[in-house]
Image 1 (tube, protein in one colour):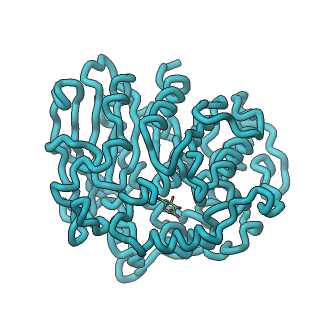
Image 2 (cartoon, protein in one colour):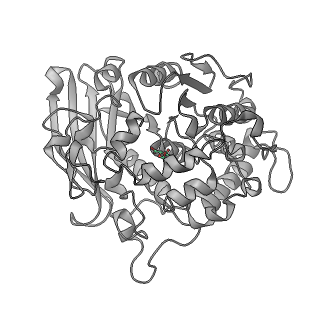
Length: 430
Ligand code: GCU
């Protein structure tokens, strides 16, 4: 069992893992069996007009693509809640042996303090003389799971049971502290001059199908409307919405440059980072790691996980309209290269792992490749060759791709690629 699965679903020896494993057995991994497909052109409007100017992209094509992704796939999320507020409940300017500033911010989505909320854990280089560029991403293990610092508050949100890793009765305990530090190499990030912040994704919406009663949905789906309509937010859109609310806070933080915030995520949270970066153009840079089906991988290839499989295993991730494409990928009015293109002209990096076949690395690469024409419209370069680059080599321009050896995970090697890309595209002010 690969490492990341073993910490996401560790005690489920035959729960979701089992289902995923069984499905993976009859998944296609053979390039020769990829169905013939034609990708929808990102630069042709629904009416059939060719997009030749950036104005046409921004005013016509981008809005119509966004609407299609919203209505057919992820679901539409509400705007900024009027009652959004926050409280910085912890600040230590000499954390991590004096190398870092640590802040913890509780962000409340509704009025008062009783309703849904999320905790943002932030690390900043303490030598910074000006506002720093910043990486923001959701985590699977609770903020306290990303660091061994005993001051990091343990989440009180629902978590999948995992007694061996210190999660009992769906609550994290002290024992689960620091269980996934490898995905968050904070000191490496700070040493390169960036800040980094993370939020437990279950604070925003617990990751199980409860018909949208818990998490932030309880603020929106009361007795009159018990669940989202078929074109309203599934969990991925909800987590992405939470990232935008964290950005609302970050824009007000005097240590952070709110105009240089990168959104980053792994796996289902890589799908989430992709969607957050597509919808919210305040994110200056988008990084999507091993995001696979429903993330960067082209749906029409049907390699590894397919639309039917993802909708069956995780019916709450997408909006209900997406179900109509189960086994009918060729009828999708969109494909994932257009999702990547929605980030244009901002920088975007798609990253894969060689052994992560369930996520279809070649499909992830091709989405970045086929997004390139939209970047060219803006005079920016992307990927020029449809052959995948060698392992370990960051390739491309403003839309870029990186694949390393190894399995499905977010590792310090991936972070080096993110930092190199961010140095080139976001770090230095023009
Ligand atoms: C499952 C799922 C993927 C997802 C992954 C994860 O494998 O099928 O779509 O990316 O879980 O988030 O860990």
